Length: 142
Image 1 (cartoon, one colour):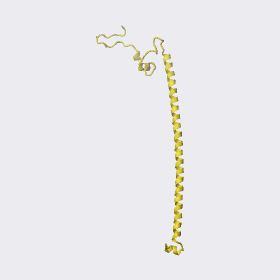
Image 2: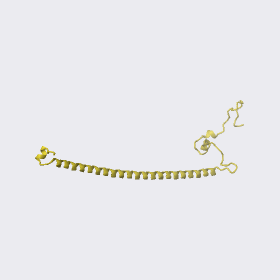
Image 3: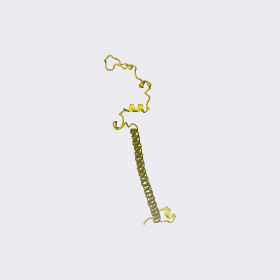
Image 4: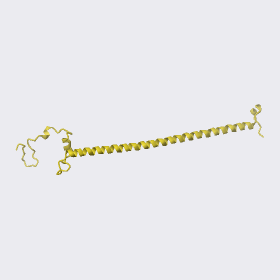
């Protein structure tokens, strides 16, 4: 049989009571730890559900953004085709020249007033350089 220690004899307690009390205290701690785990699992499940809901909302938002961009692009393309049709109609020269004259972009830019060529550009030169190497210089007055 187990002999009680000096403190237990003094307070008239047995070793069995001490062991029983220790066991009760440990079981209570185990139960508290288990409850804390359940609370943590519940919190984790709530956080996971919230994350999934937010991901769904983000996916829906990105889908709406893509649709809005597609609608805007279609609208821009429609507007550009209307503008192209107006330009072609404005510069239409009849059935013998389909689509109008073919000019370089710099020429169209000059015609649209994109840059100023200056009055010297449009004036006739007084003489032309000898490009062909004939030794003859042409004059604008001849």
